Image (cartoon, rainbow, N blue to C red):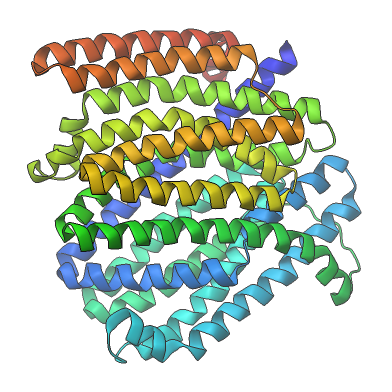
Length: 493
């Protein structure tokens, strides 16, 4: 029981730590956008956005997904306790990220004029892309250092590196924006990448790595496994991007640009602000699962424990976001965006199913089954695109929210069936019970928004549902964590 409680505490601690990091980075992003908007205006916002998205796309393709797949290799090596195996995996990773980084540089330089034409419609920005090619190498090396920190479970150092990198990068960029205007954007991006690399390198050097002899041929062989899984994960990310692009294109062609803006605004709230919980959990969950590959029973227990914590945290959050969506929309946007409320509500209804499918998905990745993972991603993204097209065609913007719900309902069912067939995995009774109870409260919150016209009565009902879900979550978390004992330890520190 003590060991189980320790596992729950580890999950909750990592979620809290990286949830805070995500919130901090979101705030830094908001501040950066505000400063660019004030100093450089809409054009500055547009140019910065086009620079960063173009570089991110090239990074995603040239990086071969190593920043994620290497975490599995290092975690698995660490679980063996074999120092030579750990060092061998890390050395192979470091050589491979140099290759992927230089590949990104070469591709960017070779296609700089084309990137300028495709992105801006002219060749005025060719030299900007020449300079920005440096960030492909800097970012690749940073991703390698972060994979080392994550795989070796130096999570606090990883959190410090991320937060300091965001803050120092912002502070270094502001004078450039102020002094050089649009011409300061490229130096700002490069300096931010350089600062991020310096900080990640500083913290990565704290990890003790035994020296190991390794030929380039051995590095290639050791890295092939990482690359295979990494390419599958990279392709999955590209599929998500393509589905998003196709959806935006369909909506703009069959509706309007305003509808695209509404859809993106709703998506931002649904993915960014709720998604920080998923990102925070993944930082610890993935390497922990990979380290348990030799013990399938413990791995399945870890998946169920992670699911329980996810459902307990998400329950009250989803009730709040559904019930008070109008206030959130007015705070983040303007009254003109109030029509996205039903989209947000439908999206929130799909989040519990996203959580269920998400925890199973990480088990498949941790076990290195790239074919099964990629197959599920193809089916999931194909269904998402189909639901998006049909939803918008028949129901307009609200249909995109319904699509989100149906997509993740289908994805969860698919993952449950496939994980049972391939691994014999199933959620335990406790996880099922928490899921059902929290889903009932979320559905009740959704129904009151859809049915009740008297908003005051609706807000009262939502407040009651929020308290019920919150009390249940706190009670269940206390059973697993012993919150009083944790607070006592914190006070003693």
